[in-house]
Image 1: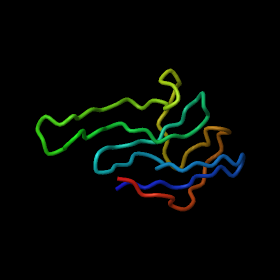
Image 2 (image 1 turned 90 degrees about the horizontal axis):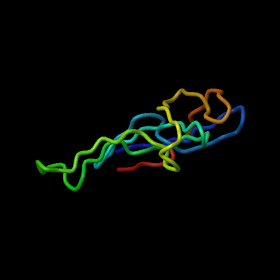
Image 3 (image 1 turned 45 degrees about the vertical axis):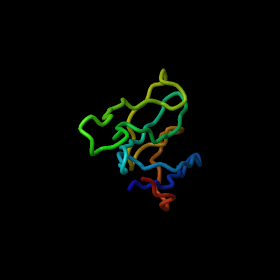
Length: 101
């Protein structure tokens, strides 16, 4: 089961709910990325267990992290504590906002 937290930049006020790094659930794995062009954080799926992880021919696929708005955007992995993608100041982690699986 994965978790998402609220992250807030104390300098510019940018706020987002993301995992804050690598995370995993029953059917896949996500990572948090910072998109240089969007100046936003996103959780993106990087590993998909496919239709059934118990089958030998399950659809196991690793995906390179990419911006969900455009694969042409430059991205970098992001983890807490990390810089705000909008202004560069360190973001603060607040409450857990959701569980996912």
